[in-house]
Image (cartoon, rainbow, N blue to C red; front, top):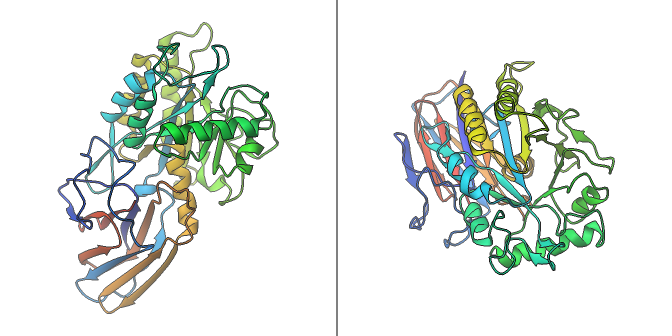
Length: 398
């Protein structure tokens, strides 16, 4: 039985030895392969439906479609994020990640992406904005313009509370204040991931009540289910609750421990990646690992990421919690219908039920059929790429 991977994405991919088609006439601001996705384009909004037409050389005996567990049909996922708005996320992590790639399964390189969790105001310095470049700016912190660049290239900016305090004001107010500030400074951007400051109680509850779709922490006191139970172990995707059930994603602390050398930290992080990429039980299981830091030495990060790329064998999706979580949600929210008539399979996708906050309505469909594919066409998308040899198609939507 052949596996035909049909990937539906928000994000555009570009040149490849595979066939590639522009479904939208507006391609003037399309990023190159190593630049990653843009956040905003000026093209008119797409219809809420997309159609994929697959033509076989002859009428196949069967042709069935299912949604893959992970985008690009990868088997492992790694998230990396830096807390408290460090400048190094832009000057060091971002350039490094742009030079590291996995493929879309069709020969196109996709850059690693990560996230930065930011705070709004500095309570120790007259309440000034952490990311403003004016008087009192901490030179070790990110600037709003840099945060926008990260967003424009597929990274995420996450809400980490306005003041990073347990209360005064209360968690709900701190979430709302930073939401408003991010929207004002970052062209209306609305975060969907909340990073709990320290492990202060009340924040996970406030985040979910405010409509946040994902909450993450090293620990939390609000009694939500927390996965994985142990932060140094990978998470089997099959153990995650079905959206929209609420739970908190645990994450692994990659800060340099007291008395730990850089070499020892590299060894520790390499082991984490080794465990992530190890064979599953069962072998068909997919796994996730989340890692955060408050600042990591550039050489340590490079050594760890280069090791990870070496052992990944193109099975690893390095992305943000937002994109990963939205993939899981979109998989449950999109309505899929399929019709096989003669040698033509028609797949219709209706995005009407997809959550309005979704930035990355990405989907990967797998087609099982013994038939040989001769042509694939896509409508209702911005662009698409395909490889009929490996029976793979990527479809990109905004």
